Image: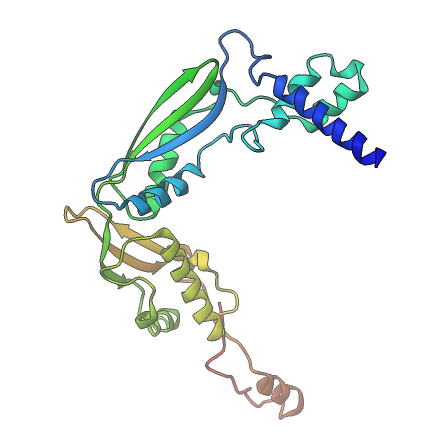
Length: 276
């Protein structure tokens, strides 16, 4: 019972100390604590629900992250402030310094970098003409940066072309599964779908014996120059990998024949098994 009482008193005391602390008390003249980055979606065509989802998606990319909070309290920053500049002279203060964290300042925020980051994120989901602007609000040494993102019209896929040499075996094997492509005409452009399409092609080729192929060998080019908010997509193999020598992979049966058959007998090869 006494142990529980001491623990409760300790928690209450610590809570009182934290509550009495100011998150900005150790800041120098002219410094402001960065407390939050907001993303506001400016669009008349996106529903309220999708605006919230898009804002959350974009906000997660903002850098740097503010000081960690628990129930709205930047507790690690408070521990750092309680340690002060004389932490090396006191064991308790050294402990507070260890578990605390330095303040994240407004000067640590690169607004231009974040604006470009948000534009890039919107391009990845099809908003190729997205616009982003930002402004800063400072009250009592606490700063919030607001980013206004205007997605504009989302681009859709107008055409998909497998621009691959059909005279090569690799080209024929890639083209043979093009009807299963994840890139569908009429769908919104998405970088995630492009990456998944590269994985799909790679998995299909692995099943055909191209064990040394890689999704990185696939290039998906996007032409967004149309004025009708459409993109043309071209799937190809990167030039440096197009003309590599490719060998047929020998089957277990062919290896057995080489070891035990006539020494002049040509081994049988499984034509479905290939290595890049």
